[in-house]
Amino acid sequence: MSLEQLGKIDEVIHGRMRLGIMVYLADAEAADFTELKTVLEATQGNLSVHLKKLEEAGYVAIAKSFVNNKPLTRVSITPAGRTAFATYLDALGALIGRS
Image (cartoon, rainbow, N blue to C red; front, side):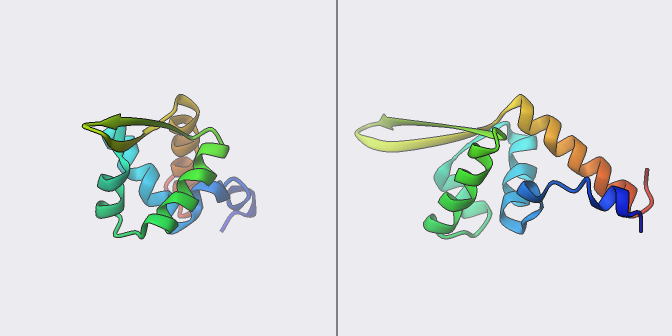
């Protein structure tokens, strides 16, 4: 194991729930809160905490609106998030010998 590569693992992304969010958004570009909650089998509170951490890092953008008088929260991956995720995957690949 390369300790140098281990140091490049982004701890904001590395948690199971946050990694799941990033994997999903890297493919889908955007998703609504309920969709993420269902796909990731998360509770509302747990998902909210992890989205906030990703938003604070600048990896996702959260837009709140109303549709038919119901709140809608849309989450999208940002360019910085896409770059951070690609860097994370490269570091992980190098760690397991796939550089």
